[in-house]
Length: 630
Image (cartoon, rainbow, N blue to C red):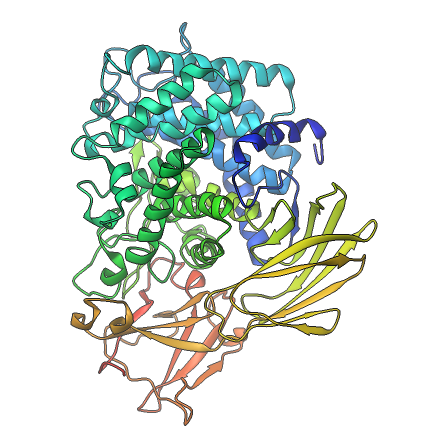
């Protein structure tokens, strides 16, 4: 299947609607990476996406009205996993995974009723609870697989099904018909309004005006019953945590759809609304680990709440993390602004990789095979992973699954797809994974990039170009916003560098070399530095090195993580932090440090994604300190 031209056709079909975008996804087979990120992707592919019994179980939910009794969301699992599986396949190109995805698509097509309807709700119970939400995910799952499908007859079946499913909804909802927001008793219909994204995508696949009209109808509803959240974002006077409804994941899904709509229609006000919304989420709710929500899954001004000990219990939902990464990817491509690349990187290396259950720890006795591949919630202050299974639903065979376990693969797939991008003038490298990239130049020739790095553990990144012939183009390299003193060289010659895109436009030759260095020390962030109102918080500090949050853990000792600390500073005013050999770390970690305290004790910390993964010991990113710093 690798480099099959048929697979590129789906991506090429989308190019016209993205004409206003600054950056473009290259398509399947772009990266061949090694290192921890690749290992994480392969782990999820092997232990989740290639599990045939899981696909059968999820498809079987549609053979009966499985969600009638409790108006549940078993309907979302198949589509979430199909979308994530298709995105992961775009990276790994694994033939076994493709065969599994194709079999799963055919199984779902067989669940259609005479009118094309596919739902886990009976006709008597439909259009309430999470029915529209589940139908949205069936549509998205089929659309994402359609993009990579190499079988022309199967593509025709998928497209016919997508039309029929959406036509069923258009028959019932629209001007003079039922109100789509009333098709759920949850969150004022926000979950149903997220149908917008697959409807716009279907219009772009077919060009049929009725689908764009239906998308326009959904936009006109404003997302919820009591306000127009799209207009609120356009007016840009409130943060999303101040909206009448604050369910984070569903709201971001609606804005993903709004950006698809803005791209297609050219209505600039709606693209501006999405950028406003994303910027306000970033500034008001995204925490140091790259997720949102300290009150389970809600926008709640968690930029402040993350260091507030009054917030306890489940927080930082993996569904929120993944959807935030996907929204950032959309806005990154549309605007080209590298701050969204910074945000993706922070979410990936902390919240998302931290949520992968790499040790296969049992969390729920009804879990398939005894464990789930992703944890649902990530602690910020002293607490344990594995506190609950988000979106837990029991299925007919007495096994359970959860929303976060089903969505996690899409986060890994998104990171792979967004690691390098095309532009009108060349290419851009956004995430630095060791391995090779296969891109193209503006003239359509092959552009290979070999990346040699241990980033984000190491500070150095070496890139070497592979070209069939010399060509002038722009190669943009993202320099993270946290890096105060970056260094860059091209063929041994220093070039000026600062945070943002390092834009190198020149005549490139085969074998040209670029060297980047992102110096990073362990730094302390105080809770009092989090913005207006943070001075009222009890003093806490978090330790950060580059994009990585360092966390304390009872795995190192049985010290009380709630006891106030006082960090000792060197004469220069920096933390006294020394690298801890990984052989001295009692668990698998990417990096670890010893931090000297005022009483000459040493606090041992490791990268957030590696600590607490046995679910039985407390960890902490935010640690109480004895006094507020300057």
